[in-house]
Amino acid sequence: MDILFEPFFQRALIGGLLIGWMAPLIGTFLVLRRLSMIGDSLAHVSIAGVALGMLIGIYPLAVGLLFAVAASFAIERLRKAYKTYAELSIAIIMSGGVALATFLFTLGKGFNLNVTSYLFGSIMTLSSTDLWTIFAVSCAVTVFVLFLLKEMFLITFDEDAAHVAGLPVRRINLAVTVLTALVIGVAIKIVGALLVSALLTIPAATSLVLGKTFRYSLWLSVLLSEIAVLAGLLSAGIWNFAPGATIVLTLILMLILSLVFRVIRV
Image (cartoon, rainbow, N blue to C red):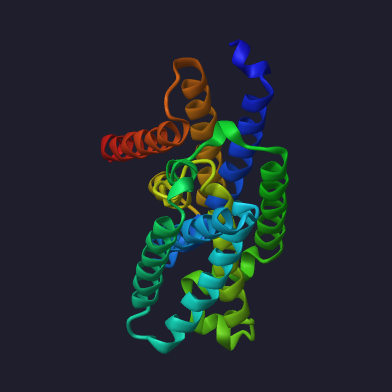
């Protein structure tokens, strides 16, 4: 257990716990609103931003964040244009993100190995700058959810009633999408773009199986996510597993156990 005292592992642990805290806070609302795939869409766009950052010599995570936020605005705009087929906005942005990332890969063949760490995650290489960026996003997500929990609850389950009540539904929806983009942008360094949506959706899916109320499910999803991050990182540190994959597999195991428990209880 000497690895616990290594600075790189301590940075990984702090970063993982911060992501494990904020991802389910946003992810629960996405799952309930049937927007689970938005994570994959924004992740692919973020990778395009990371590739551009490496190509022009700018902090890759910052460029990835900017790309993700820009994509979040585009998704909201397309959702308004295709009201009946809102899921088209996610598919269009995902396709564009993949195409742009592939194009940038061909322009910068020399940094492909570095981009791979963002595809599959490299939590053990988190820097102090990465940690501060993750911390800032975590604070923004926490403040937003705590102060607007009731409003988000109403919009999630009855958007028409929220309109009637005079809530700024459009602005809140946009804010949630932007915060999702920020979470995705900072999380790709931890679990990778290919797995990042799991942190948004699987804890929420598990808590909805076990939870009886909305608040209980929300905070249970955070607890499950933190347990998975801790278990995944410790396992990866001790047995040299891939950290991101271990975290996600732990989450999937929790989901399977919760489904089994519900069947047995019934």
